[in-house]
Length: 293
Image 1 (spheres, one colour):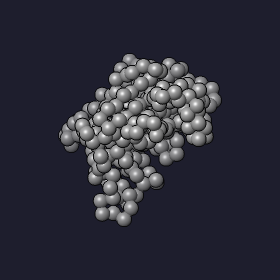
Image 2 (tube, helix red, strand yellow):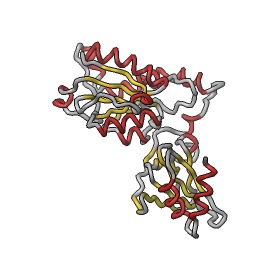
Image 3 (tube, helix red, strand yellow):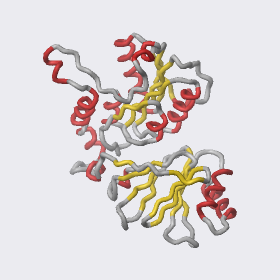
Image 4 (cartoon, helix red, strand yellow):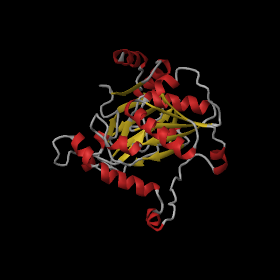
């Protein structure tokens, strides 16, 4: 199907590659993320997305630009990243970035990643999974210290205070929550099952855990009194993102538990709690799973 997109862009091309891409994505149905080059425009790379992730690595003056589906391959070159939103088209030249949406130029919001290139290397371990297993204690200590404002007071018998600046609810809204729905896929779904036990035991609020793929395609019974918590390591899980969008359409507050800063689910949720456990490259989840719990 990608070949079809290339042919369509070629048929719409009349000398302006960016406009050809803009016209093409108006006709294309479904999700996509692609980069387009043309022999007529050496040094120009045009990117567009809907539903699938696309990121731009913004380098220092004279060092060029990078287009990738994830921040991981960008880290070796720059920590300054622009995540594209749906329907956005980016034109990249060696020293220039132009971002457009619905035919109009928009201001790019470049973020600085806290991860480093060293975080995405094996660090002497034979493979990434073993490295990430051993990283769990340090990752959890960092996560706990970022969420618990005064952990030292626990030794004195004083309850700690929690540092949740991005919680999308005030005290009154929290009291009005009738139930919680956790949406996730794969490993994150199993973290949600553990979370359900924790929340029900401590808050005495009913919790259900749903696969985003099931939740988004049926007609779930939800209203503004329901808090929807989305869990995703990458923040780009398509079905979980679809569940978040449905929940917001129904007036529910949404809270995301995410590892990848600036990802789509993080941007589209009302609030986000970042795990900050570092990049997880191993396919079988380790530190991200424990961080989610």
